[in-house]
Image: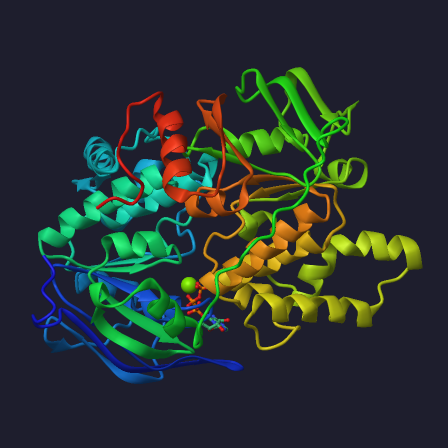
Length: 516
Ligand SMILES: Nc1ncnc2c1ncn2[C@@H]1O[C@H](COP(=O)(O)OP(=O)(O)OP(=O)(O)O)[C@@H](O)[C@H]1O
Ligand SMILES: [Mg+2]
């Protein structure tokens, strides 16, 4: 149980960390107690992941001290941290793509018998870890065949594979839906009750308030709230501390949905090679339609089919009433004006070793180039500056390489790029994963404005509060089929309960979202 008074199991004091052009940490302090779940909050680029990397021996601090279990300690490597009983799920996926699920889970402690790998024992151990999370994955599948969410779950399983005093979770639920997150947090509570100290970094404040006991808030590399009992702080107070001033949640004027004529995007009994059956769905100009479902329900795969990345085997896709046969992403954009913001942005959506300017401007280049035959630098810079400001992208300058931005800032860049492109239909997959509260409302406002300007938007998000904020209608998928559709009156309780019912089949779950 919460034991705020007890001796800290981990104490980090006065941590400083410099990178070229940025001071990521500027005297940060963190105090974690056994048997408690501690939240580490802060805007994108505040220094959370840097702090975690110091606690796991990946970075050496330029100044400051670490004390673990009452002993001063220097962590030179990830092995040192593991030896000190510190386990971690990093923000970036950290799996060996060609290795199997079982190999990845047991990677740090591959069981051997004599000189040989004990494969039976390896599989048994991996299976036990997966069972903890209720995961039914093929142990022999290489992890590069898994979805983003499945890969995230495998990493969590790996962190749980040994007993540890300290468990650091850097945005563990970024790709998970409510149900998978719930399962994880059940486990987190169990570990807490057994005495583990757990750190949770998350931009989903609902889950933070549902599971955490204490909180530290980082702003610009400094702890502005230190190990405080979370129950004594309201959500607004915490947000104000994070952003450094009071924060107004976005408000939305209703906008007009074009009801006459054919829908902008229409699926008529579409079945696909990857297994969708009879999917019918339409999105009108000015409308935001949400697509919700469990991990593995087939949402991302459906988006991919619309872009020609998967084969439509029967049924019809229509764009503005005309049958559309999209062969690839380029054709989707140039011919049908369908834009797609992929879920796996880091790999699919960004040029990590290129400057910001290029990353944001890349989809507009085509247009600008066609009109002028060259890319006007000034215009490119102006565009980038506009987005950098409105979304609060923290970078040392427009020439910083995207790969060195914090996770959330990378997300902002890849999303901004698509919003800057001229499309008529936009499919957005998990738009605000890992994005801080302030930028999240800026994005919500932007997405809403695009719809008000007449775009048809298909929104895939696992973030139910976000879905309820933005979507006019929520279509629920289950096992590659449509389970039903819920009109959204933007009342979180009512809408989310209806959505969750549909996910589990009628009437089975009365559990409220984020219930303790
Ligand atoms: N290896 C690096 N080289 C240069 N700069 C870096 C490096 N790692 C982090 N930074 C910078 O340090 C700052 C803090 O980054 P960090 O990743 O710790 O933020 P964060 O709080 O985890 O943010 P997010 O919520 O977006 O994950 C950012 O300005 C980031 O660009
Ligand atoms: Mg981070």
